[in-house]
Image (cartoon, rainbow, N blue to C red; front, side):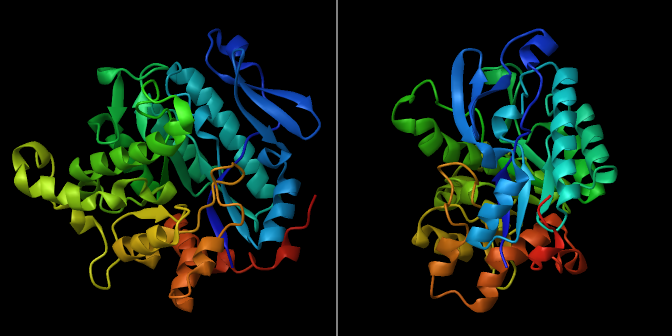
Length: 362
């Protein structure tokens, strides 16, 4: 059985947000030909997408073709809109969250949902997270790797995930038993490296490494010991720089240990104990995946494909299945068990996932 933790979805249509809110910068859709649309920001095309980005029937067809029993749905990160006015970002978040909840209600054995919240106002974000958990039944939230105060992050205008203002969000997630999936967005260095798709190839892994570093060095997991957090794209570059992180922790405690004196390696797997936080499996390399399993334990690495985008794994779980050294138990954790554990899905609620007739196409 496969549960894909990392997939993105959009509504087929939404209002012209620039016109609705009275200022530019939001994404709109142009359906310029059948089964295809352009995501536009002003007159610039951000990305072209196909109907599998919005049509659940199309998604289920592709899930069945690749053996995926359940997808965990989250919005496309460009929709976070952390730069927008808080009430406008809340309004957009509610629209997106209601849409995801509607899809989950229609196909409860094929989809689970993660919310989006307006992190630029942590109090509003916490209240929306509570609504999504208590009223919509979503299992958690997807957030970005940092919070911009405007559309272009400039130094002090940008809050990282160790910022004390976000403690109200971590507290709410802990109380609600809501999982937190961290996805890179608005990548660092994009003005310095616009060529060769480097913001996506270099900037995204660096963003995720930054997020993990801020939350570990910043003591977030010490203050919120029940918080469940997963990071996209195998934790970005973090797993491959943990030696440097630990070395810096020891040789410059005056700079590194200012907010937390716990060795960063302590958050990774030790003996039979898995890591403190989770990552997905999207690393595109067998040796890299083996390192993830060594550092985190199979119980903390969840299948994630980034469906339906080109940087994702075209056949979800293929890399996991290709590694012959993995035991059946390890593959079971990687393909579905870890996602269930992260999301807090009870066994009885997922028993019907393998029965694809339980949720017929509508």
